[in-house]
Length: 167
Ligand code: MG
Ligand code: FE
Image 1 (tube, rainbow, N blue to C red):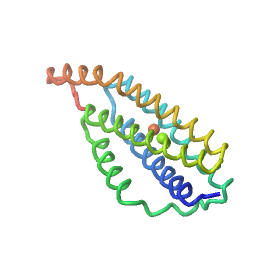
Image 2: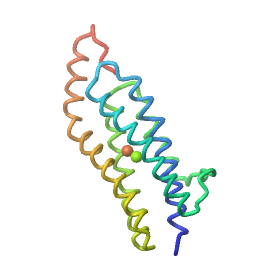
Image 3: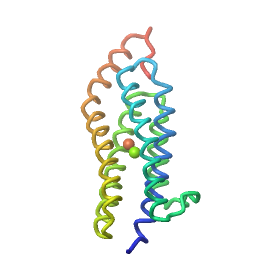
């Protein structure tokens, strides 16, 4: 089978999940005053750890070396760094926006991987990527639906100087 792009893209996806793990974990730790958002982020952190494991399993079944994390291409690094920086922001609304953008980035990556896997007739890889895609889509939908609520809470807390609105 034509695995060249699949190998590259799987390594990229794996690196993307490892980065997601770090960002989500840092974000969850900071959110003291936004328990609903925090709980959803913690849930997605667990999903993300599972995604990385699923990718490792499917990569080893395809004889792709998982010990070497590919030196990431410029695009992922630049995007990831920008989103990582915004997610590391000490302000909840910026973090929520960056999280949403990152989920959309993951969604697009898995859609391309699924297409490549279908092209190469790799049904197991298609199945795994579709499973992960569902979790990314659910998280993106949730973040989009709750952005208004998070922003409203932030604005209200900001009006009261006694409250720490930022996180
Ligand atoms: Mg993910
Ligand atoms: Fe995700």
